[in-house]
Image (cartoon, rainbow, N blue to C red; front, side):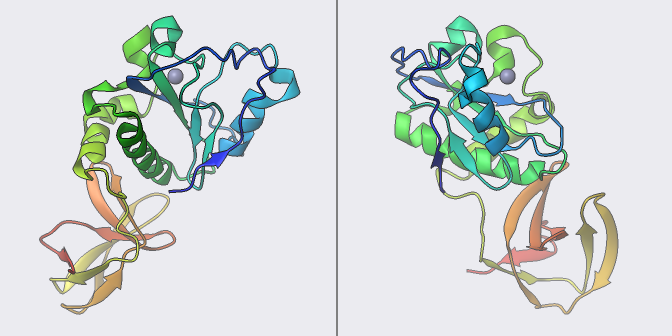
Length: 228
Ligand SMILES: [Zn+2]
């Protein structure tokens, strides 16, 4: 997992330099669905010249392709009210409409697993912005929070994506799904046919394996099995 460091200048007021010993990870969504509102745009937002008097900052922004770090994890950011700021590392997930939120979410799972290991933070201390201040954030994940937490715990600190792993089909008909509308269609495959998984994701609560860009099959173990 690669993390790009693009730190807020120490001269900015939104990088106060206050010492932080984080016991929690606070999860946010940017709530900015505009095209191009990705991690790089948010990095500019928190560190730019016009941000010198901005009263907001956080540690990491995640989109569907990168993770960018804006603050060291031993410095306080301003993202979750004073109580949350003093105890947590803040992560923003991008929700730009031209991004793939499932991939953003999978990347955030990896980052949280990394931070839990690195900073010795327990799973019950991975919390929402809402838990500190009552704000409706992270708006999408709040509807699916227990699954999100399960994804973090299931992987037990390992990479969440079985990228490059192979799966074997154990039926002769299979649903195939196409992005972006997730319409399902039957296709005929050979029992025993083998595919290479690009990415594993959860879509509407169901496990999916991405075979190539825009094409997915179910991860239901009745139909496919992971090869050793
Ligand atoms: Zn938030």
